[in-house]
Amino acid sequence: MTIVQYFKQYISKLNEQSKCGFCWSYTYARKDYANIALLTDANKCCVHFILEYWKLKTVVDSDGDVKLHSYDFRAFVGLNSRFDIQSGNELKNEDEEQGKYKEYIEKVENCLVSNFHNDICLVPNAKMNSWSFTPAINKYDNNFDGGYIEGTISFLNLYNL
Image (tube, rainbow, N blue to C red; front, side, top):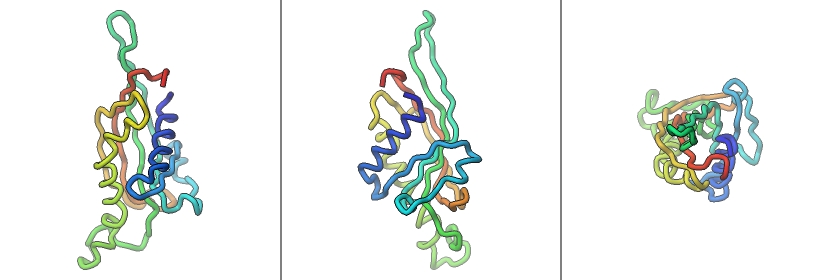
């Protein structure tokens, strides 16, 4: 199983569970092509997980045996947003609750912080070594708000999953 297949299966499981009250949509695309990810009536309100980059690393012991495979990855995770609202409270302090951070980014961030590290084990033999979340606003042609996840996942038995 590759990281592409892994995240496809993982996001499918999140979608089946309606994790954090959302439907989930998976896309694997080059960063420049991710910009044209299609929204449909079925996925418009979903959390979009867009895998943009990955790199495979293998650990080999002194006998030449493979001990571990790990992937560094970068994905955008976000919701389709409105373009016409403030990010936080920079324009109208009283409208902070309707800003992009509260309305979109915080929901994605809270869901990931509460679940991502543990839920990665929904697909067997995976271990999340580390990950980070960087907020992002007005991404892609579809105007997504959310953030970038960068991390490293290890697989104990990569090709026998």
